[in-house]
Amino acid sequence: MTYSVKEIFYTLQGEGRQTGRAAVFCRFAGCNFWSGREQDRSEADCSFCDTDFIGTDGQGGGKFKTAEALAKTARKIWGNKDGTPFIVCTGGEPLMQLDSPLIKAFQAEGFEVAVETNGSLPCPPELDWICVSPKNLDKLVQTTGDELKLVYPQEPVKPEDVAKLDFKHFYLQPLDEEGKDHTKTTVDYCLNHPRWTLSLQTHKILGID
Image (cartoon, rainbow, N blue to C red; front, side):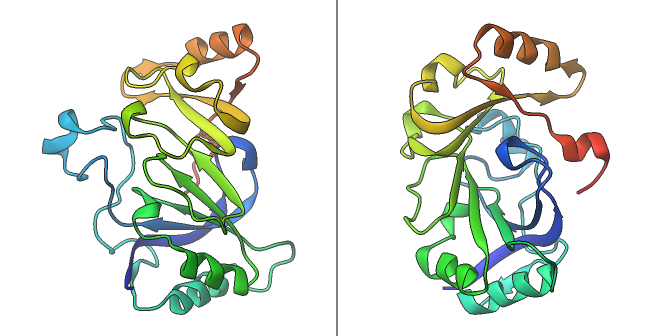
């Protein structure tokens, strides 16, 4: 299998349970909820997406012919730093490409492997950390994991729709919408429903990738 990667880079995780943790981010090209083209946004399952996942022309991006080639590239980016190497597989929708052979190849290079997925595809069992961010209840098949991170508010999925799913941690993240600040609304919801923990996009606040 050839893996199409938009970008791969070293940074701090900005959201959710792993906020502040150093990680290699591997952003796969493509998504099953939106083409990535602005003319299609209004009809997308995730019309508020703020990520460029089209093509393979980003930092470190490209086409990798084997799982081992991609894993070794990620390991070079991590380098000889101390601590457990950590890689976050994201997109787009990473599970369109992230398969068991690639997860095992990452782990053979010493990585703890996390995924950030919309939950519409089942997660391979080898993953070390599963973060699901639901965008469409009708297409949600991955209903267990480590972390459920819901963008709020959004019409397709409300917190009460997913609050009883089998996850260890529940995060509510303010929708990043031009001209509107949903932070207070999200804070208020968390205060009134303590099952939910506030997640902020700290990478945007700090001005880092």
